[in-house]
Length: 231
Image 1 (cartoon, rainbow, N blue to C red):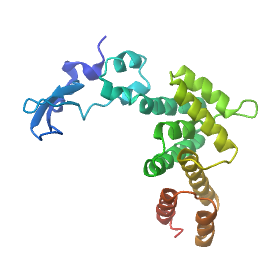
Image 2 (cartoon, rainbow, N blue to C red):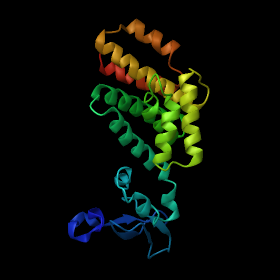
Image 3 (tube, rainbow, N blue to C red):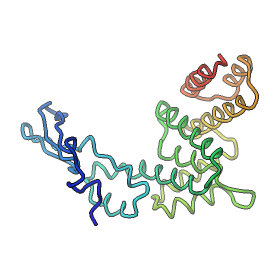
Image 4 (cartoon, rainbow, N blue to C red):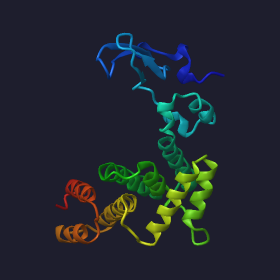
């Protein structure tokens, strides 16, 4: 069976489009399933800018599909991994929508902070999704290692995520990844605290000065709590 997303019978008028060549600016026609095309004017070959492989987060044939991609797309494997981890996190928590919502909130903050702070987003986001997945009987890093192995994570990525989880659990900071995860977690927890009992502007300022480590974290915290009417 052919993937419906790649089967022409399901295509519409948007399946064929033109984009400007990044080298000379001339129009290059793409079909939605083209991974790359060469510019007819200058010969520059570039990746289809509209290609989306989010389905690889859950499709059982993802490895076969991704394996056919050009070298330019291979580097996106780690980013696809975080989507797979997000799906796995939701499966783990099942109907605990409160926890799913909290973890998703941490991940959203971590993505914004990490991007500005130059952190490795795939590492930070995998850790954000997995940091609370353990229990009294099982360490989060151990369970995370099992999940990442099952999802086909590269050895280097697996080690970095597990190390970040251990650092975070110990309350240690100092790297862009550790600081990003700590700030995202703190902001999300303060949001939950505010829902239960409203915090004051003074309490928020103390939080900013004592808890938040990054400039991006401070900006996101201020935006978030301004929307909540705290400041």
